Image 1 (cartoon, helix red, strand yellow):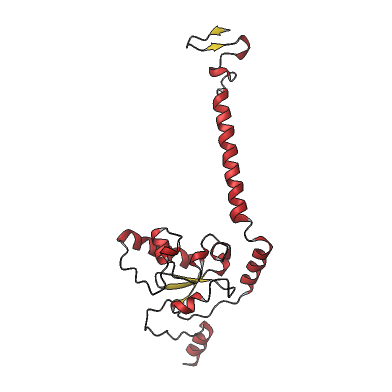
Image 2 (cartoon, helix red, strand yellow; image 1 turned 135 degrees about the vertical axis):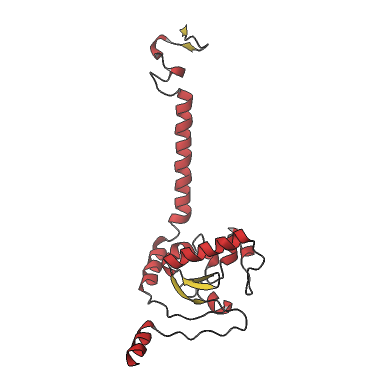
Amino acid sequence: MADDGEGRLRTEGSGGGAGGGGAGGPPAGEMLLNVGLLALALLAAYRLYLRWGTRGGPGGAARERQAAALPRMKRRDFSLEQLREFDGARDPRILLAVNGKVFDVTKGSKFYGPEGPYGIFAGRDASRGLATFCLDKDALRDEYDDLSDLNAVQMESVREWEMQFKEKYDYVGRLLKPGEEPSEYTDEEDTKDHTKQE
C-alpha cells in the first residue's frame, strides 16, 4: 500500500486510477450507485408496465378491435346527459368534450377507456381537468361548465388541448349549453349531392 499523493491509500495492483476503479474508470462506489439507480429505473418502468400496459389484457385487445370496426360517427350536438352515454362502459364509442367541442376518442380507448389513465374524462367535459392538470372527480362538473373562473394561462391550456384533439381525433359536434338547440348537420355526401342538383 502507498499514499497516492492526495491522501488516499492504494494497493500496488490497483493502478493509478482515482478511487481504485482501474485505470481511468469510475470509483467502485460510483459504479455501484449507477447500477443501483439503473435497477431502480428498470423496476419503476416494469411496475408502470404492469399497472398500465397490461390493463388492456385480452379484453382490451377485443375492445380496440371493436372500436376500430365502428363506423365514423355522424356529426351532431350533445347535451351533458347525452355525452355521458359515451363513456366506453355502456357503449364502445368514447366521446369527450374540450372547450365546447366533442371529439370521438374511441381509437384512444387505451387512454380514455374505463381502465385507462384518463378514463375519468370519458363521456364528460374534460376542459377543466385538462386546464388544471387534475385527474380527480373534483375537476368534473355535473352541470354545464362555462370555464369563466379559469385564468388566462388555464384557458390557453384548454385551447392547446383542443388543437391537439382536433389533430388526432374526429370532431363530432358541439357540447350544448343549457337551453341551446342542436344544429342540423348534413352528411358530406348529401352536401355534394345537393350542390350537384343546383
